[in-house]
Image (tube, rainbow, N blue to C red; front, side):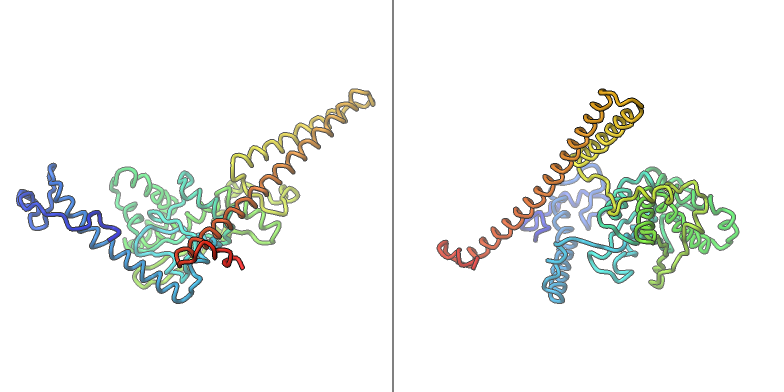
Amino acid sequence: APSATFATPPRLNTAAVSRSARAPALGLSMGPSRAVDEDAWFTYMSDRKYLDKLYKNNDKWVEKMTKDDPEYFGKMAGGQAPKFLWVGCSDARVPANELVGLGPGELFVHRNVANQVVGTDTSLMSILQFSLEFLEVENIIVCGHYACGGVAASMSKNDHHAPLENWIRQIKDVYRLHADELDAIKDPTERQRRLVELNVVEQCNNIYKEAVVQRRRVWTKEKLGEEIPRIFGMVYDPADGALKKIEWSPEKNMDYDFYKLYDSAAVKDKLEDTYQKRPSSWREKDVLNQKFESKRVTDEVEVSAAGDSDDSVENIKVAEMAAKYRQAAERLQKETLLRIEQEKQLKQVIAELEEIKAAISGKKEKGVKEGGLFDMFK
């Protein structure tokens, strides 16, 4: 089996098992000393029992998908273009794709304990940036669920120790913000269910606060007439499988203007027609910084030259130098963009050569002789 460490089951040291005072029937030794072959036996058995089942399930899934669509995995290898980013709970009962009936490639997913949106969570922040600037997803869903262990733990008034206690402390802050409403609910189960809903609302707020979200929404509002990404909240009930819509909007839930980072009217004329992603490599970043710096210096020189009222020779020389500097900067920019385009074309050619190489290898395996390889390209 691909998951097994040993080709054949290792011999079980019965003497070692009999020395185990905790669970002799299973051979479990909970004490500080453990027999080597005893460990080997349980490694082998656990691999065979559990991992082999997963591999078999994978084989069945691949067979089913290719039966329905022979080109399915070829399409998957071509890339992804999901319309939704899902921020949900890690709970095993809340499978994101299945809940909303979407297949692979249709839902970009991030999950953590109690579907938290924390500004210092570099994993989620990276996902937000990647999904908005590169995948350009149009919708963000924050989904909580009733009977959430993380929410229940936050209400227990117990110290769960770091890092779990640090994490669920965010939910305690949600309770504090809505303490009057929650304390008025006498039934503990109903109070917990309401906290689940309010937690979704606050995490939608946290999504909205992020600069990468606001930057994208400002651009799409001015260029497309609609603020994208749209933000939605919902709660899943494991008891009946239903999704409940949670009402959320910036106007209703983010009435405090302090979080608004951009003034649409002020930036309207400065927005470019194509959404500008942040530089994706150090080389492009250096080029952009160089471009901006050259423009700044050029502008300063031109302003300095225009500030003098007399048409002195020095001012003329300064203006000429500024013009040459601008031309050099523009030439550098064009050369850099050309080099980037050439690199993309080179990568494409390499990919095509790899495909040809793979095709040739496939022909050889089927018994095609060296002298007949030319026929492949007819």
